[in-house]
Length: 393
Image 1 (cartoon, rainbow, N blue to C red):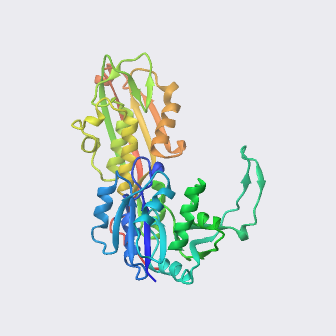
Image 2: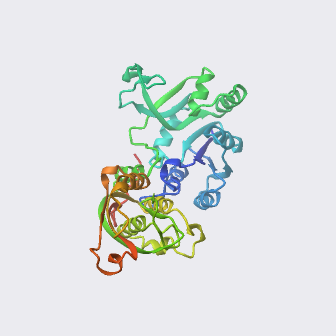
Image 3: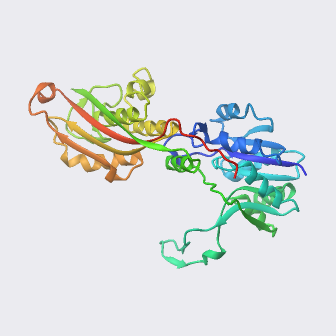
């Protein structure tokens, strides 16, 4: 029996705050690299097809370069189902097909082999386990209609293993009938074919957000620690520009001079975050030589900074910032600033504090020549020297 595998790596990563979950670093290695290595090292798998996006094709090709089982790298489609079909079309001469989400990096060679072993007699098998939470069925208004018996519910994941001919028939039938499903098992079920759930007995989470990376690292036995960074920034007033602080436009005031929108509060926070994560400063990461940030939105810059922290295995925990300005009066805008900043930082608003004070008439700030901001940020960072316990369970 020849076994082929399709690893899906064409997702949009909408919840990663601007970064790509598949290329994000997980305990020193990209998420996708871990998934691919598990299939490469599984003796039961003969052929491997990787489905990627056009934007990430070069990066994914580099990750595949040292893998002997990769037979093809193909571009995915708009929907997950389209991507599976693209991968299936690239597989030739296999009897069994295993489909896996590349964003599930904790899968192990033995876990893959166990699912394949249960599919030896032509049965379809998918990874899953008992539902831990109580599940409610609700109507369009979120009113609960029923509570299914949890004992009969299973939370399913990947890999999902099928006879190749069965999976092809299922996809062809779905295309013919205009059916879109969230996993391949649902398409096979439509044919009336039996599908078994196999409990891997080990965590198999899907990475969808920066928080998931920290959870996955904890499951791998990688420790983390809290670190603190300090950011300070200042800009002069200048005519003909909007005044933006913390992502909020302050009407009726002269703006600040700077390469971007000169949001001094957001810039100080970015510097504090980068410093805590050991990633330099705002000048090194978003320098004036980069035309993307010319008159650019500093809130987008903050989102990008959070993404770069995630790539380095770091996540914001809290921010405390103070704006120093003789004018304008900022108290009416502070809650809106906190809300905008918390959204960009992916934090609860209670973890983001903004205060305002004056320079009591002293110095350039006291003469109202500009505005300054100080920020302190706490981030959780993967501990240096942590051992990556990449065990095969």
